[in-house]
Length: 115
Image (cartoon, rainbow, N blue to C red; front, side, top):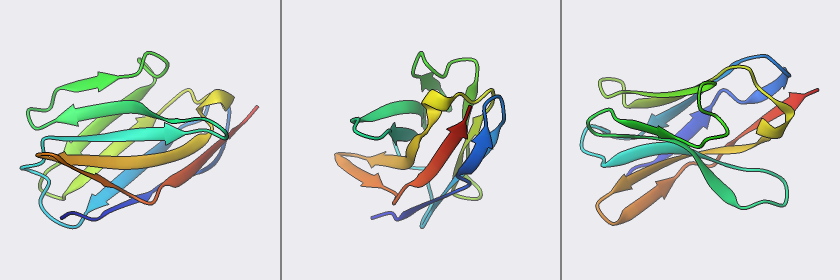
């Protein structure tokens, strides 16, 4: 079991930046992957970025070059640095972890980008 708690969301103008943080209740060193998903109003939850144990990353095309995912195993933290934000980035952002066949989710943090 692992509990995930997101923070760092808020209201920002287009072109601005935010950094989301995800705090895990236990060591993330052994977790297969950790990632960020987002769900806009009336939309499904989609993958934004993922990072595996080796530190390899993958991004949705819509955020490549603007968002950066990172993990700090010593602090049990995962981050999402979001730059050049656009109104279409407005969504609830969820931290995700996978351990074996188990999926864990945080409660989400809201990001609103005004034009």
